[in-house]
Length: 154
Image (cartoon, rainbow, N blue to C red; front, top):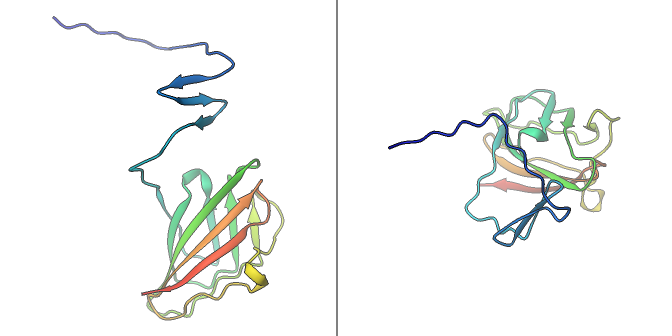
């Protein structure tokens, strides 16, 4: 004997405290009391161009093989409340010596800003062909990004 249940819409009313499942609470878009294990982030393929277009709605990590000198980085869908980050794995192409300017960064269509680096030192990527660098952009309330870099992976 088999049975089938077809439902077009399920609607449930919850208390003002949210929904609790095994000590994890879901309320107002927040997850409280959860421990994440064995998870994977989406690697967003960023297209090399003079302007890098990065949409945080697609994920918080990505990779690009530079075939151009980057003069502009445009971030979209950066949350306007809270903290968000995007880590970019940058690989130099077979030519190498590609550069990335961080003085023309836009966040959610705003005006150009310069990403802030430790000590105001700026960013100089590794220049050897096929070299790999990691650059993380940290956003507080969709403001000017703080930039941290790990360079010259081999």
